[in-house]
Length: 328
Image 1 (cartoon, helix red, strand yellow):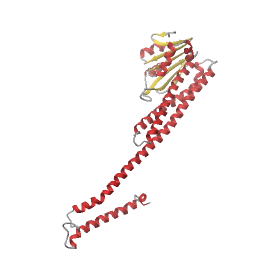
Image 2 (cartoon, rainbow, N blue to C red; image 1 turned 90 degrees about the horizontal axis):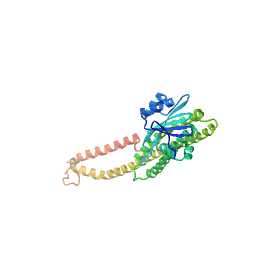
Image 3 (cartoon, rainbow, N blue to C red; image 1 turned 180 degrees about the vertical axis):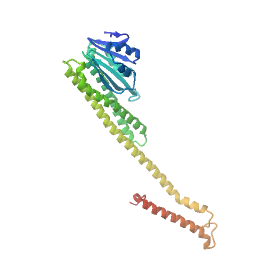
Image 4 (cartoon, one colour; image 1 turned 120 degrees about the vertical axis):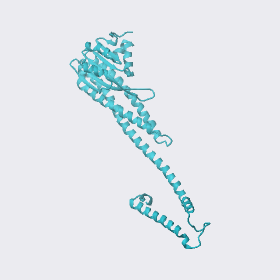
């Protein structure tokens, strides 16, 4: 077993002349150790200590500095949050700085640290460009796994949307947020990958392997493009499910309101009849029937006002077009 070299307590893997320095949970003391050795800019050091930097590339004469963001996964969730990955790439070294929650990257480093020489050679190669490709390829593959979980959740929501007994509004909202947030990470990743391919591969690779490295990076970029394309399709799909769920919920609500309206309508005759008999007026056929026609004048006035009010409302409803759908 080949144990890694140590740079004053920092984990380092050496493969011939190539060094991979991995710093988890960076602190000012840790970064001050490597900063003089590799001539790192102070502003880049501050960016590494910050957790909310936007993805970017800074280019210098002897190295480049890259900030990327990748999602961190959990068993019960598609992803919990995003973790910042900072990289310094020089002629014979690559430094990765992160919070230790990028599980694929941690496993990749441990594989180089403790596994046999052949596996380390396959991961690191002979140049920082090849190692950078291995790191990005591993993290993008993890994005594909997250994407598969999103597609699986979309299939589950599709079945639930058309089930009247299941409410999926919350699940749809959460998945929409996750898709949108993931797109915000993949879009700058695609842009930075294109810049690396067009401008930076030759800076950290030999002339012999430069053409092959470009092909490797283009393959990773193709995977990123597929992830972004699938996210766009998922975004359209979840919007359709949102609209479908809203329409079905509205239809269900309308059915309930229609039932309640019919129930209320059926109760109107007995309500009106009970109202008349509850009034202190003389009604034909009641126990206090009147002797003359004048005794029924209050009843006539009330009936006329009620019928007149109904006729006026029907006329207004027709004028406003509220009864068009009923009469058609």
